[in-house]
Length: 198
Length: 128
Image (cartoon, rainbow over all chains, first blue to last red; front, side, top):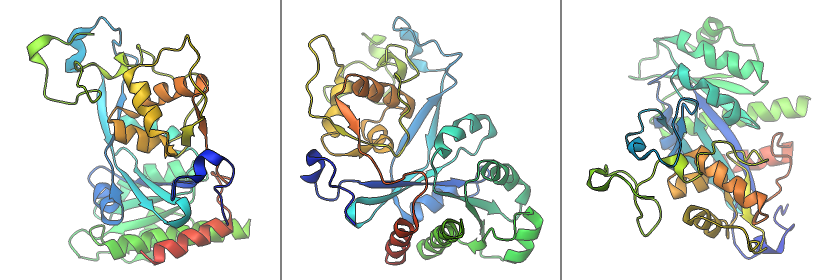
């Protein structure tokens, strides 16, 4: 299927993006989102500037170079470039709760999400799970086995997190490309199952 | 716009000819919301090929974005490339869109990819 026939100006550039899918990587602070994104994709720098309501943004404010009134939030951002202009964009959601107001915009139109869980602190995943459940964004839970120690089985984690029976739970090592690839494949297979079941 | 002289932090320079460091929202003249259009992170944008109206004045940041958009590029990639915060870039892109200088590349059902597209993704992922 050729998606790039609509406009002559697009045709001259080979492999320009024609389809860009958005996947989110959520999880508590320090759970390994950055490592996961970096293990599978080309990492790109991306930041956003927040806390605008209190920010003095007037052009006269030259003292503002210190930027005390705004906060720069670095986002994890990775890109997978496939043939035919197909791309997957991975965005790590902010780990700190005070930035969650950003999620709605980020989550808009997301194909799916990975909830990265730390088995030592499973409760830190609850907020992410709630968020995706409420917005009907398909997600898988990936339990990061930090030190190679497998403390719980996928079933135990599924029970502990009280996610729906259909929600895939996989154990992973975010440092391993193959392992992260398996997580992504699991997610897309799950989205496909939901799509064909609908 | 002049920065505070010699006390500039080493951070980032805006534009190739390295004008003075400015606060991010100075390049948007303080505006924090794009005009009339919400550009998603994965919206693909491309130049429309139309020229700017005579009364439209573009900043160097606008022109940089326009230059990159000669190739279809997503909002997220644009923000990454010009190294300005995402929201700032969204405002600037909103200007370019408003003036008819860029347009959105329509994607096949972007929010709900169909089975065919998902199978294509799976195939590519498995061959990584």
